[in-house]
Length: 201
Image 1 (spheres, rainbow, N blue to C red):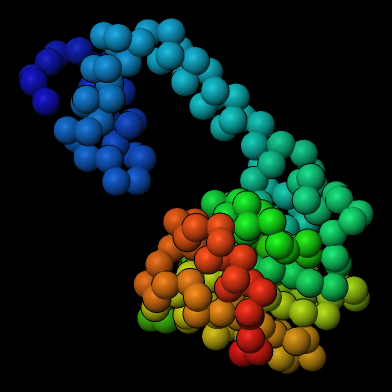
Image 2 (spheres, rainbow, N blue to C red; image 1 turned 135 degrees about the vertical axis):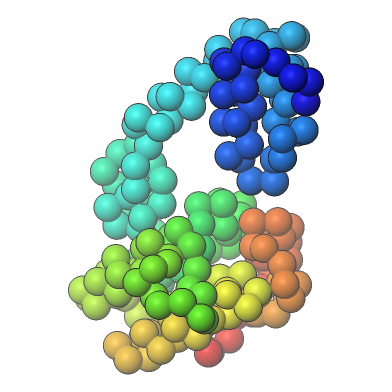
């Protein structure tokens, strides 16, 4: 990026670098594009970000992101309360919904467990999930839908232990999902087959 004394531009570039996978060059290109070619888009983006940052929170039941106390999925009385699908993040939940086959409820961990670190230091929703499964009388099956990565498998193992200790049926997405893949990038057809063919853990 060219040298500049403009602190506002530098702050914009620095702010854009907070996005995953965006380095200084990509951030600078985005900043220049918005300021040179799309000022109205820049203002709309700033407004949308501020509004979302101020109004979006965690659902009190499933921990996903929403604007209400309870998200629309948890509030839907037609969802199967006996099934709880545990995913790592809201993007994974959205991918499951796009597959159009699952009609149960969700819990979003907002992360995953790391084998070499204590559970308290990761997966912000872990303790809330423990409380949820311990107090949900309607729950019969815990569906593990974490990614097939090392950390995703470690999380799946911990979830299986948690579910079995409470006498729940624990199932895992079938291996139709490619090994090492992130769930949010799996196509809906593969995801639908993986869910339909889930197996006991």
